[in-house]
Image 1 (tube, one colour):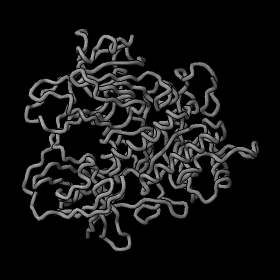
Image 2 (cartoon, one colour):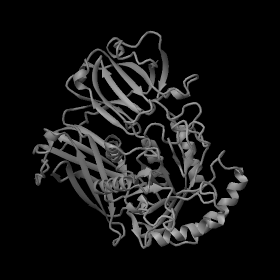
Image 3 (cartoon, rainbow, N blue to C red):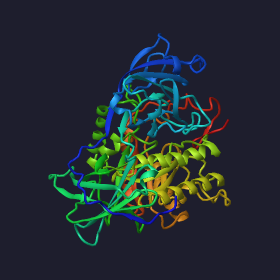
Image 4 (cartoon, rainbow, N blue to C red):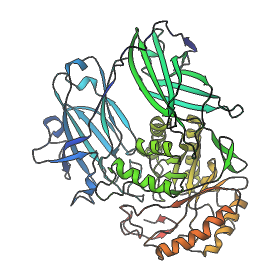
Length: 573
């Protein structure tokens, strides 16, 4: 859509005292569940007729891969529940929001197909189901989830090393709004580092296209302190809106406090959308004021050079709940991380909103990644398109989190393959174009491949990102003496000068390598001071916090393909 360049002036009518018309119904809880190992559900019209009576009651969020006898089941399964929709909702816009269904989801409402979400199992999606509901009656919602190994999904086939849990494993809710509603609220807190306490708030409202040219809408906002000793209101009033593809506004504020991992000061914003003098919708989110970038081969947070240390955690390792682990289980692991003075982490796949909200409130900087993993991953038209979809959906869900500092576009792929390098560069450029205030990079395990052995070796794909992210396993996977660590880092520096280096993984993986905690302690006591002795190492992340559930197994006894040998993470077919 062309930028209209128009300014929508706020009408002189007060809307502050009127009640917003948004309501949300949580659909977590008891659902009917049925495995479909023979794939008969579509043929037998389970969505239209209802699930067979021989079904099980489960509690959503849920994954079947922790149920006895289904630990290794990869295939289809069905979920069903009914919800009463009051007659008063007849003229509402009704959206069904899933925070995560792995990895394919097809959704029916009252037997009519409402939509689906395919190949991207770790991101939130929303379906408009208004036309399928019958207000005043009970309405049946049916979901077919499928975690079959797929060439049309990311992660690709079985080429990844974490749990492959199928199901509706995160939250579900129904959102009722007026036709004039806010689909999404994006907020950036931009501090003026030259003047203490000054900052700008950039606000974007994603709304139905019919509202972009409307001259009778009004937008009000309230902003107050969050996660701070005080709860002061810092702004309340109308916004002056300009319209392009979104409704946009900017505010200049005084007395703001910066977000920092030592002082994670946050702000809550509530935006009200008025239409014909009535509040038609209201939405709120949390954000922070901070800058983050790279300067002189160092990370710079709010103008301050910082070197970051932390640890990675592999979620989904609850033996009782798997990927559907509870918020209490998630928080326990995050508290362990912060208790170790972790201020820096990365996630191999997009996380639940709860995880990043906790990082916001407790001061952990994070990278979230497209779940491309392993040398067996193929880049083709389908998997590349899914990578761009992951970036779009990660950003849509998590744009406002100050703890999120970078987007990752893959991990341990064929980093010296020219086609992979080109694709990774395109993904990095796309991420930067969509979100220029955050870093973007690719994580490699092949940065130290020796060009002296192969003068024609292309540059590692990690060179396409803002920093060099390197999984550095000198004393384990590289099968070298630990004393070679510094030499390997210096070789990388020589081949890729003037670039900050992040040790994105290091550690001891069992049972592939023996030694247990005694060896871990000895290695860490050598490696961390070594990283600290090199000024261009901007940060490090230990792998990892926990023993974690994986279909592969660290000794690759459950790996894909089922036969072959491993060479630097690549398994030949």
